[in-house]
Image (cartoon, rainbow, N blue to C red; front, side, top):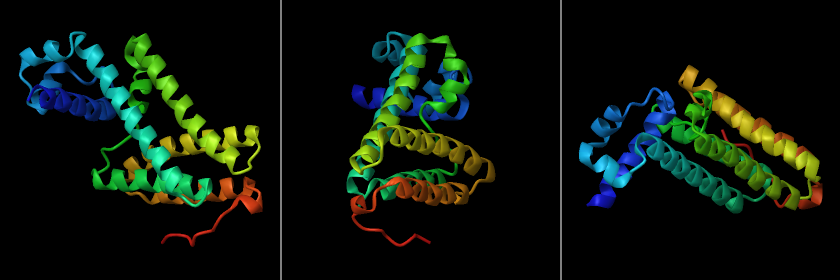
Amino acid sequence: MATDTRARMLETTARLLQHRGYHGTPLSDILRESGAPRGSLYFHFPGGKEQLAIEATRAGIEETTSMLREILAAADDPARGARAFVEAAAGIMGESGYTFGCPVAPVILDAHANIPELADLCRRAFEEWTGVLTGAFTQAGILPERASALALLVCASLEGGMLVSRAYRETEPMQTLAIEIESAIRSAMPQHKTRRTLPARR
């Protein structure tokens, strides 16, 4: 089906961008690894590689945002939710053989490939993720300025943790960060806002 071809191309592009960045991902590799015929490229993506990169990055951002919202909503409190989010990312990274990563970090490190729309998409991704976290923290009684700082801490720690875990090829650095993140957020929460403190995972 045509939609299957399009989906494969987006999935392949997202995966390759995470590993190589924009400039290190030639169209020939996307076509080969997705199994898509060359003629389907401009049928599904008239804008070529640039459109592919933008749409693949957008899809990765939306997936990450949905995952973050779902984990926070399911958690007893946002401190536990933030920890669970980092732990989930660590689990996915381990299962992927340390190929999983942030959908925007490699593109940013590649200087956004000089594509303004892609640069704006990456910036808005962090605004959305920190916004979701800030909202959850303020609802738990944390002062807005502190909530915003903690949201940035979570995002920056996760980005750095994925890099370190990939270098060591083990999830322990991310697991350690998850515990520290929970502790930092919980210490900022008024006691009456904490519904239930769960025992630490081992």
